[in-house]
Image (cartoon, rainbow, N blue to C red; front, top):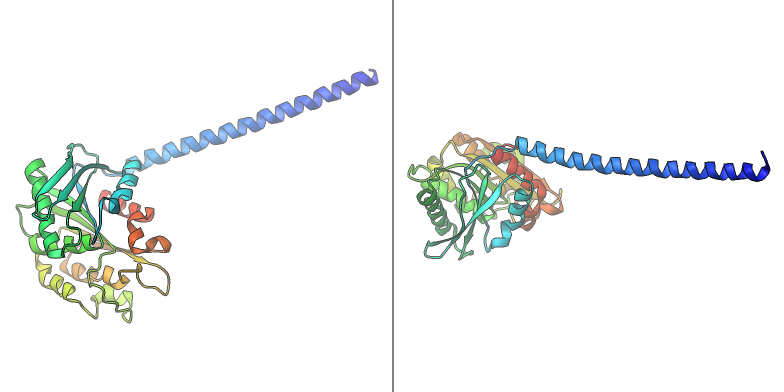
Length: 295
């Protein structure tokens, strides 16, 4: 074989090897993308399997000076993850009148109801009455006899006051679960001298008027209601979410446990554990979902 022909063959062989390599790399990339897509689909399918879907509505109550934006992000994320569906918004006026937007479908999709207080800086006593109004509205208009409640900050405080006031009223829907996120149950008493372990076992050493109210009301709280207390802790030295002391957010743990209620608690840490970020924290999303819908 002549030298020019040999060189031509070598160049052709090299070119062929380059093309083969490119095809191989292309094939690997395609396989990787497809694997990722399948993995995402499998995760979604698996998530759908473990979520318990019911027709029981879950009501979300914002905190002091809260607005539609307070729970907007969490509701969107829960809906995007196919864990629940936002179906209804109830706006409660200062006179207790309700303006409804949307409708409960009656489908087993974990319906979510966002509740907005027109006077979002009113006291917990009036808010407890407005919570009662919301539950009556759901019963009279949709025949609802069971609900779940999620409350951020004062929303959790008012929800517990509602249970302490009307918990034994059989004409109202039964509250199956109450999830309180960063709720100051012992007001803003910062008793950091007491260890968290001691408080969870015995209750707070220093008590506020609010906590004393809960002590007096405890007999009205249904034993069948399950509770989940979520607290935020910014770091090892700041035992609070920047607003609510850790001990206050978990203050009613021992009280409810001694009452006989099933209760869980969780301390969320880090930058996204600040008071106003707790309902924007995706870890909190999953905690709420797991507790209510048994994810």
